[in-house]
Image (cartoon, rainbow, N blue to C red; front, side, top):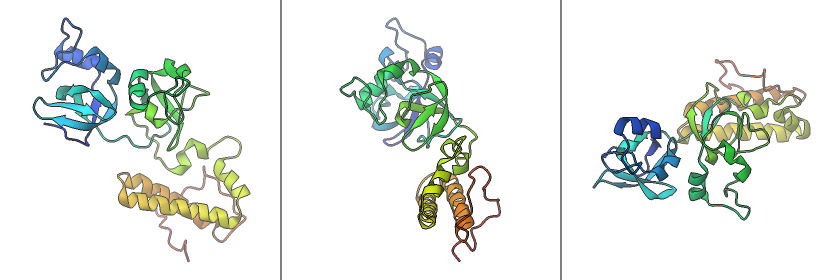
Length: 255
């Protein structure tokens, strides 16, 4: 078997499999291990975690989809989806796949935070570009007024955005940027504590998680900002221009 429980896989596109294996009279793709049915088509393109691997016929169940067995040849290896960034190309998941995984609330919307409203169904299956993103939200170009969850989309083409805090849209608003707002309303000690807290957070993540390089860069950014205000309470940080040089090591920041 190519995969085991806990592996991440991408479910291949319907057209790709249809071209390779053909379609039977019942409309199902004739993959050797077992047929890929019309109902499974809704999950094509998604990245999922393998929950059960059956070595008797090389089929797999996916986390959140416990009523279908996917044939091995319908899957390709994938990596766990990283935190989304501005410029990423994503596929908005199908309504049925989200409904099966998350259920619906009393209003009939997909029960996530934020919810996936029925009025957002027109975006299902669309390839869209991330305009801004955080741990719990995604904004998409062409979907003004709607806030998506990372659970609603699948990353299909990463951007060249570095992931640095200085590159993120929520640090680059046109009037006053959120970081500048914090500096305005926090006391100098509170603001320094905020910067140091984020430095520690990303340093620890770099030590224990899979995005070490990206998290190291974020830690470096926050430490650089801290070094600018540590002994100068009147210094005003500009996230767009206050970016550390490659040779910045943070030496002396805690002196």
